[in-house]
Length: 369
Length: 130
Image (cartoon, rainbow over all chains, first blue to last red; front, side):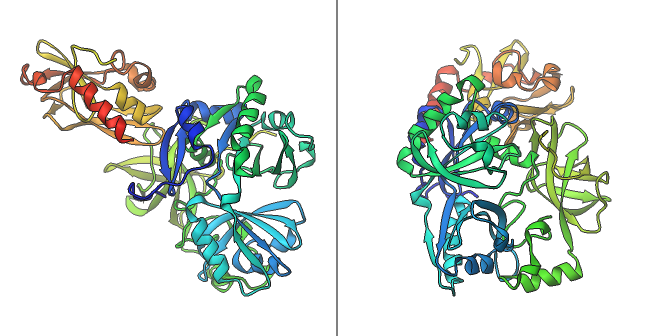
């Protein structure tokens, strides 16, 4: 997800604030984004034990409106959006004709004729073109990214911090549901979603209110020691929670079934892009599957490192690194589907050395209830 | 910031020479670029290193960085404190978080490296590129 340094980087409405806060900035999917403020480890810990605030305004939004909005959503994505009620969201995949990922996304049902898709920053223009190209329905597709900023407040204290700024009862918003309402006097879509493995909220609003919402949330979170968090912690948090990242676990060469995402692949909902091939893959079985592993010594198996089984090159690490909360080194990798389940010994090739690891069940981390 | 009696490389290692012994570490600039350090792999005592050769790796949460020896010589000691507390590299990179000690093949070799003023000018220029 890196683009050439020569390309003009896109900036969120909070870009100058990140610079003022002294964030280390990086190019992510063509966007200049904060990698870390106080440090990945302290930010990670804040989200697991208190709360963290992320600027995720780089994420794309695509809105689909019209009589056949649902038909278009159903045609391009693999989860069954007909099951959504108004005010509910789900995780899904935007599919190619081959049943592989154009992107992964959240689908929010705003009304029977209006859906909001939240997609990855680096893919949003491509996603928009893809949805538009497959729009043979009575529906309008809008690339709405520029109309939204998005903040994610995540962690066990997130609800209390946000509740102080909104009349909306956050207890009434269940996990993967959303409501419209004011936060700090700003009209927002308030969704109980996230990418960290913790309880939390993602709020969508007009970009001109970004600095106000950021500072009001930071103020409200003072007593909980709310920390600004960057993409570095976002990545370690999602990895610990066993969540996929586009360009790593999933891409145009992987299917939901291979990625362990059979649960978002609703073949019984009727035909959609790639459903024939996915049906065939389901009948015939997959050749490779995504697994989690943990290292058995202190060395770190990282993205792209080979996985060895019985000494032979058997796959690649898709994401690997320290799990700061679990205090282990973990990763995800594709291995032949014949590979044994949790407990199976493998090795990760680290700079030419075969380092012992073992397959473990996903997710690595599950929050206590 | 950068000790005056140390010498520095463009790859952000430092060496402090004391007679025939050199102590080697990474600079504050390097630790800041890396972020939170979580693992360090160092050579075995007795290893012969040539200037510019890899002496090991320092890993942060997000990246692996290979560390190169600024000078030639034999490794006489590695820092045992870094095994359990690699994060010391973030808090005290020029002091207690040294990586290795080396018996200098040529005690005059460190003098050929950048001094503190030259290194500081070099990293200031680097920072501008960001």
